[in-house]
Length: 298
Image (cartoon, rainbow, N blue to C red; front, side):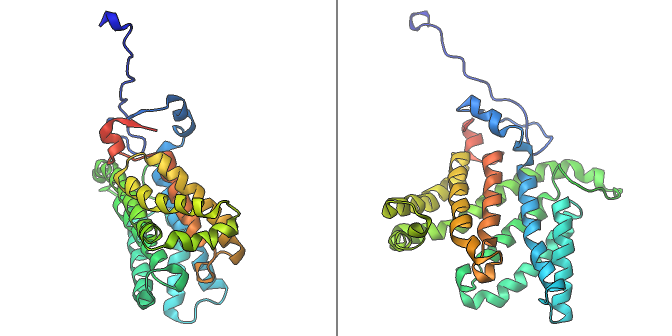
């Protein structure tokens, strides 16, 4: 209507799929200038998940093979799998068969520790449940579009190409939802079972954030409400960025002094969470998200 002046022209949704060559509608950015920060890295979001997952197995393989961690033939074999398999996954070679073997490895660890409960700090299955989900995502999505190695192409590989392009966005969405659901119980405990007060008197004080009660509730709401939003893929980049900041603080101020390995409450678990969360920062909600459905994203 001319009486209202010049109408604002909405930026159209472009046709591209950063993690797949299949064209798909893509939400327009709410802050167009911000897109320049993440757009060059966006196609590598799934690759970061793949590389981070593979990299987590490599130190355990080294420990078993060269640092006295393998005491039986079976554990020596697992060391070979974790070292060689982790390297192959990082390079993007034979990802699906290696992921399947790593899933079996992780399931054995979960079965051995299920009696210790859920929390990884008490020897529970939380960390390996996360690795299980990431390996399942790799089993779905395979190597993705970006690999660092070459291996002979099999005759039926071309027939799988179009299917693989469809599966990568599904694998990315699976990893996003699994990540959120893994953190969600911690958020629930902080919000509804007085966990915020506990961390206010503990880890928040250690990090030097004041007032501790305020920051404890920021963490609690992020891990509860934020993870619900992340699972739905709504405001994905904002939530993932906030979560990545939290995880970075945990790595540097709380867990790094304990070393690397999760068995000594080291930085291993929070580090892989940070890397995967960073993938959601650069990749956004992906094809299967409310951000995509609504046609707008940060």
